[in-house]
Image 1 (cartoon, helix red, strand yellow):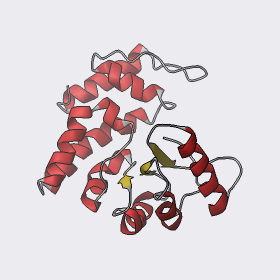
Image 2 (tube, rainbow, N blue to C red):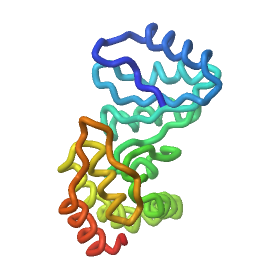
Image 3 (spheres, rainbow, N blue to C red):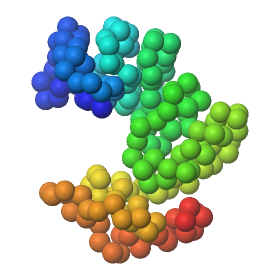
Image 4 (tube, rainbow, N blue to C red):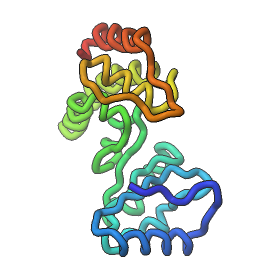
Length: 189
């Protein structure tokens, strides 16, 4: 997964050349992480990028659901379009995203698959209710610098994923206990 360049802006010709060069240099499928607000990949550009050998798809993050809708409308039949909003995965699936790439799936992999299954079965209300439970945990995760909240939520479940690299500080025992109590109350553990 490769973001467009950041700090400096770019134009379509530069982004096209950038991803062509990357795809020709690696023997791996490439997913664009469309998250750089000052250098977004438009649906029209993604349509052209999808023709590059090795280009697998796009994680549509910048611009929210409106941008995801536009990307799906223009590119869903040409490449894989993934959602990226932790709090709206079920809506991404209902809109036609082929999946979602986001931090919450690391914390709750089973529940994330369950949300997918609910949406595919047409049980949108069940998907929304489960998503709401995950949202309550995400709101606590957001109190901490990324990815320390993610690591703490995983640790609270009894899975050791280590600590974030410096300068990000790990969440202390009190924070991990807060996650555990919340997840127990929500019947997520």
